[in-house]
Image (tube, rainbow, N blue to C red):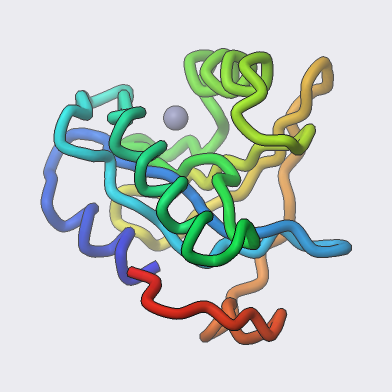
Length: 154
Ligand SMILES: [Zn+2]
């Protein structure tokens, strides 16, 4: 969350976003890391195009440093308006990623935040199914709850 706050502070009047990294446990998607949008991202008032090379490299790095226990879970981005529902663009972007099988899992997640960070919603996307909103639990140190022994994570 600290990283999201930092990224959101860097911009005004455009959306921003990045990758969500973490792991799936029995009943939870645990988000441990959030990246920025990357140097080649395109930020506009109504959309974020994340720098895929940047986030892929970062995810692979975190994944290998955690012995494959942390991986790409989806993305986060801000909305400038009051709607925190996924836009048509958001939905089709998720469908493309699911079709490309960017993760071995059948789900991807998208965290949508109001630009002032007062509210946010988390959605789960699955191939061929309508997206669903999920409840969010915040925890201080998500890495330790699964007793992950990870060194030198950014
Ligand atoms: Zn959106």
